[in-house]
Length: 397
Ligand SMILES: *Cc1c(COP(=O)(O)O)cnc(C)c1O
Image 1 (cartoon, rainbow, N blue to C red):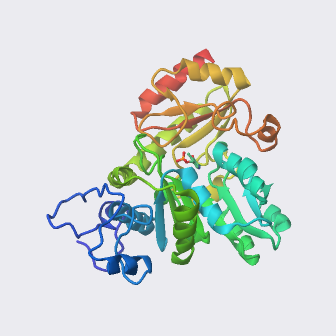
Image 2 (cartoon, rainbow, N blue to C red):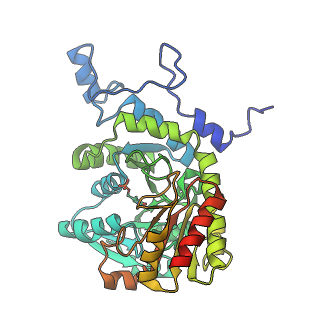
């Protein structure tokens, strides 16, 4: 029996919340509004909508019912006032930065970042007069030392791609806020099911919904979550005027569909990753395993304080370094050699030559992305089958 005061569980909210009940036919799944524009009854109505005097849709880059339904659901799941869905994770990140930084500003970002995010900061933002400094955010003291009155945004991933470093969201947010900087967290690896950065003090959360939120490897999408006030800026400056990274209603529908099984999928991803990490740790060809759920992991205690479980991503280093890593990939039969993550299929890649080739070799060395590192996105297959494939591939590497 449900009591009216007890909050609903994650899976219930992922299935039911945000539902647009305006469909006249009672369709159980909401219709997909595949339209670029919306017809006004009168010229005056169009004017009133543009002036913000009347609600209602105008043009899909500014809002669309299918996107809106997904945004309501994600805001609810992440515990944010507002959500915006966009065309990709990079669209989410760039829309946030174009909304809040100007020439002369400084941003402080972690050392290990998704490769294209690193490139956006290093080769993109710097061309427009923004100072980008990398800080090892694992130790909040480093931020205290580096932050200044010019710092507008503090940005990090946790766990960080690809080497699984964990950043203390609460401690970093407190320090950033003493200088009025906004804290932006890329929580792609966790989804709202495993971690809620806003509850720990962050201002803005971004996700690549291409990964676990979509969950089936069949679309590109990004998500931004923040206060209503920040979202006004991001929607009407960042997305509308700067990036135009608008999500297709079809893809929004597919994500809404994927969210119905997010809890089930994440539990399975976590189960499989724990099994793979323990298996790798016990293998004599493996030099080191990076997985926040292993008690041997440096930041295991911190991970436990801010993540519900440890996620589906694992990185490891083979004794034979770079060459052994490539041999391992080429020996896999069931697991796929592919970038991306969070899909039903187990995906394995080599960051130094693939996702993190945007870093110069010296930068990789300095930031802890070693040449032999192999990254695994644990899929949803039967665990024994994944382990058997990894085991046979290790024998060749
Ligand atoms: C994939 C990814 C991104 C970029 O998202 P796209 O949807 O590919 O644009 C950003 N951050 C992390 C952590 C990612 O894994």
